[in-house]
Image (cartoon, rainbow, N blue to C red; front, top):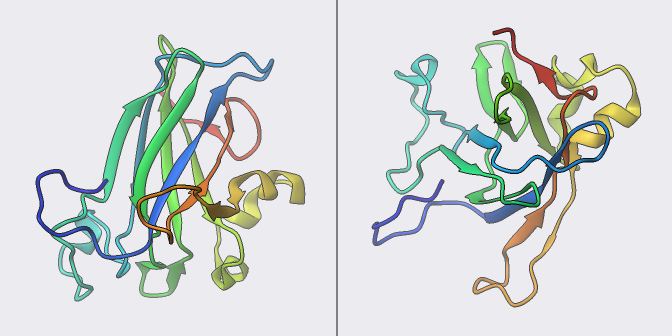
Length: 173
């Protein structure tokens, strides 16, 4: 998510994401391909819909990334906390990170990770579609300080992704 080879860091608060991807039985899924995408610290997305946006770009921020889970199903990302972003003239999305998971030999699953305490949840049209509070709580993440991080303001969020539970949807293939 942060561009390699740049002299300047991306604008915004650096965050780390990590956890495990598993199936409904709790079995970790190794070698799953994970993609994330998000707005930058100014609310601009690398998306055709935002091509003519007046929101600031950040040449040091990639706005998407991908990785594979390790042998224990664990994934890791280093990114920045995204700003709210306009999905349309009438809808401002809260800060969130989109996830797509491609398990080996399986079809794509998608979810979103929200940041606890954001006020725009009340006006988001997707989060309330989850069937109950437990399902919504599953995708809202607390961030905590990272001990011994080079930047003392760095935070870690953990989002366990269990394929096949509410909040994680299978995309039609």
